[in-house]
Image (cartoon, rainbow, N blue to C red; front, side):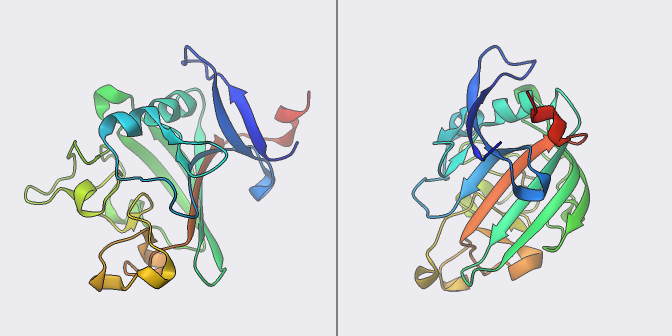
Length: 215
């Protein structure tokens, strides 16, 4: 099978919905839940937008927290984070465990088992178990700072974090580190003052085999 858009219906979902499937990276079988590469989609959004999703699945988008919950509760899932800098270098982070709670938990993050070449920017800063925050809902642990507003994007913030894949998107020529503010970054790889060109977050069942897609 080739990469492309396919309809799916997780067991706990009442409706079908379209997703973009990556059938080539690391053996394939990945459902894309977040993608950024040109800044055409604004990620500084309200809770309802992050809940329901935004953008187009064949382009820049956020699949939606409800859909991610429905996906990751039907099996044991893993997460693959793909990053690209402005020099064309690629790197990845892979987590053996990934799921989120439902809205009653504020989509609490469950993640573990890092491998890859980016360095871990989630477990090492105690973001596992954190609730999701958006511009109109502050769930970080800081009483004097609203991390989702500070970074201009929703995320599982703790102390405003070492990763901000949903932060404000900057073209290379427009970004000047601390003079501009925080962009799209993964701290252990390029530092917190380097805004990345492209990001992609994908999930698949931990027991995935290519045979699952042979009809």
